[in-house]
Image (cartoon, rainbow, N blue to C red; front, side, top):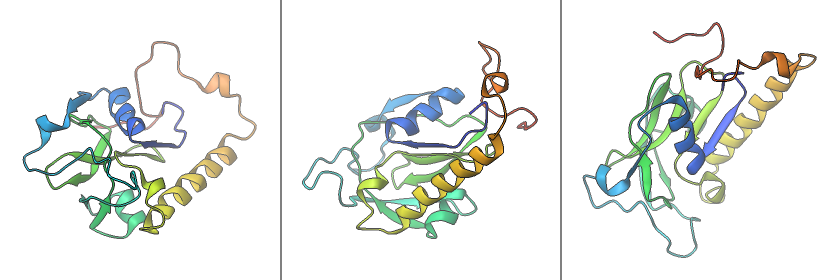
Length: 170
């Protein structure tokens, strides 16, 4: 993230993005839930069908990619992101308030989803656009970094800033 490389976090990767930025990390889902929405569903076929809807925030990258305000997702997690620290924003929540997607407001492409969209491609083609956008961001990053010395572009050891140089949050 310090080098503004594309990041797509799925499930635990979504949780790790939140932790790396410094938000209160993980809480058991039952501490977040205010309804009987199930977040750990292992019914066959495992993860290959949506089991609950998420509400996607208008104006977010995820909303632009999916093209919908609501979409169904699978659910295999017992923990959830507690809170999201800047520069991250919540881009989708389950009906019970669980953070289902987050993204960076300052990086070119940092997006995390709590569910497994790769298992839902047959059910909802919209998730293919998420992967297409990630691949495009990787290609753009490769072009941007072509010829640069990656070792010199790193921050010094111990630096905690999760946003790229020259891009600040207020």
